[in-house]
Length: 405
Image 1 (cartoon, rainbow, N blue to C red):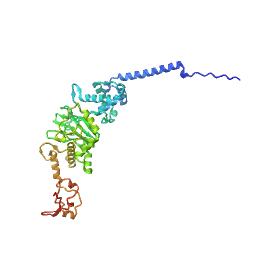
Image 2 (spheres, one colour):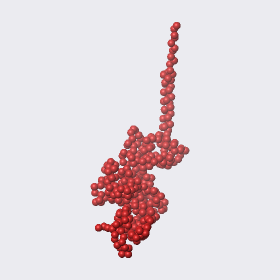
Image 3 (cartoon, helix red, strand yellow):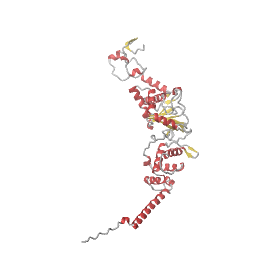
């Protein structure tokens, strides 16, 4: 009995005509998509600013992505968030903020691999306006450039864009200056901007403002996270809070704190110093006590000034005078003067107060309530009635008082 072998039916997948049809369909679909993308790239972006299209944020992001790519749009987003909006000066018909954004964008773009378009300052400015005016959700995502391999300048500006008295827009008189910001992650190079209200003659700095009467702190609702030590030196509050805590619990001095900071951040300090090779040296802080301090290193003088500045502010806050006190070179009223005048005022108020404690009869026999000691750190550790050296004062009898012999 013979068995006839069945003839295999050729698969349609390998049929030449079907393959041709499939390839033509693929080419047609691809051409259609490319045509749509070409149409997106040809959309006039200026029309997006003027709201000539009834498009939502998702549509606008799609159009911008087709023009400059997802990665470049992300870099622009980071640059826009990195540069404050109250930099308003125009130089050679180009807004200074736009020029800085272009610089940051170019720096970020240089780290990318692949082939990308290189927009001009004007094109980038237009894209930025669209994002900031039409894409609030996209711009609400916070970004942080502090961990970039290439150290970028941080831009320090006042926390205001309009005058706190007349509500008029502020202007820039001076060019930005160099500064250093000490953070938990090491020193950061900064460009500092100051603004002014020409109508009220008020100069607005990063942490305070100055009018004809003197310098004042900004109101608490501005929620600043920086401490101004000098015109060129700033500390982040997250870093500073370690100083009083370590001092209270470990007796760490200003010098020891600075040495530890410089040791931990040795690599970051070197990166900072390299970034300043073509920049002017910071001036305004240096004296003989800073000899041997390299750029980016913290000095004992800097953290000491930061301590007094911050603690003075906290003392004024505790007495309800933070926004009342006017700092000036020569005292001209009750709540005016220098930092020393603040401490003198605080000491005078404290001399009329007692530390809260249970005053026993034995405590009163030792002079409590009639003898006040306000000199030296020893008072923070020992009450005067704990000392064993007997001393007799006229009118008080024998009391226990520290001996310096």
